[in-house]
Amino acid sequence: MMIRLHPRAQELETESAFKVLQRARQLESKGKDIIHLEIGQPDFPTPAPICDKAKEAIDQGHTGYGPTPGLPDLRALIADYAGRQRGVELTGDEVIVTPGAKPLIYYSISALVGPGDEVILPDPAFPTYPSVIKHVGAEIVPLPLKEETGFRFDPDEFLAKITPKTRLVFLNSPHNPTGGVLTQEDLEIVAKAAIENDFVVVSDEIYSRLVYDGKFCSILSIPGMKERTIVIDGFSKTYSMTGWRLGYALLPSELLPTFELYSVNIVSCVSTFSQYGAMEALTMDQTPITEMVNEFQSRRDLLVEHLNAIPSITCQIPKGAFYAFANITQTGKTSQQLAEELLEHAGVALLNGGSFGEAGEGFLRFSYANSKENLIEACKRIRSYLS
Image (cartoon, rainbow, N blue to C red; front, side, top):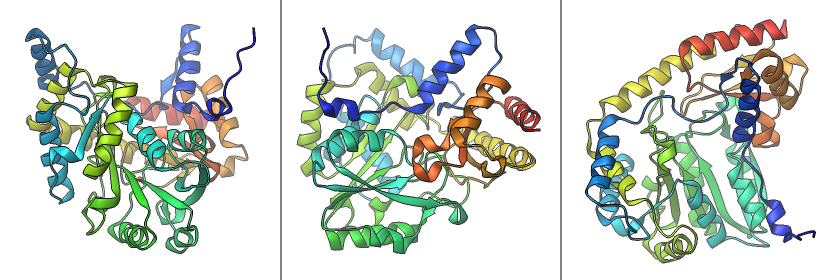
């Protein structure tokens, strides 16, 4: 029997990091030594107070269903923490908690756009964005990010892409895969256009605590944008809680019932005891987070130095997240070709920049969520292979 899929199911795409990780593990199972620079996962343990609080919650019986939008106490804590971070006042009614941040990407796109609508998307972009946009039948309008400006967009090019069909604009700062960070001036340009053209901004700020040069800016802080912005954030990157699956959105309260309906139909609710761990994350001593960020910055500087010492590779210093986006055009190879060769023959797992969009071709994404020793060894292997 041939099961016929609906065409929209065939619009969904996978995330390249997991494909490369799977292939890398296959090679490891055959005895090959692989250095993992492909996956966007902090290599630090979840801080002990968070784990202890979640275990305590289990022992106290907090293992049943919870409210669909999240525990009220956690939502209130997020509103306070995220509001202070961004310089705005928020209430728990403007927060929803979900199992990871990815559902919120789906909710935002599915709730606000469909066939005939346009979504302006940074190029390169996190693969889930275009995957879901195609799934709902909307049109992607790519906005190239420029290497020469630190992977920011050209303001005139952005304004030229706005049409009466523009319903959503996606921002991601600090940015995956480039590590670029938008400035306050960049955000003000988007905000002015959003107000004048009546579109909604989805701002993915999952790396908001991982900024090394300058300071983090959120479009939510700009007057008039709280009413038309959905901020996506979570605990995975900041608190090294990727497997806990805890994300949240800051959103206009009028959107909360719709997002809650998506959650009740798809996920019911978030793991209750995990939310107790999340409350501990927001209230505990933040020293472990500061130390992690400082270590990432040190690794960033080390990696970029060693990458730029490899003939035919150049790399700008990323300002945020934990990725370096290295230019490999001088090698004469495509991004996919070189990424595959380095995995198979040099034992270095990286991501092909072209898998993030057309503007990513000619680049490789390096995750520096690995030890300094492994970063140095990876660069040695790449240099040896290319020579």
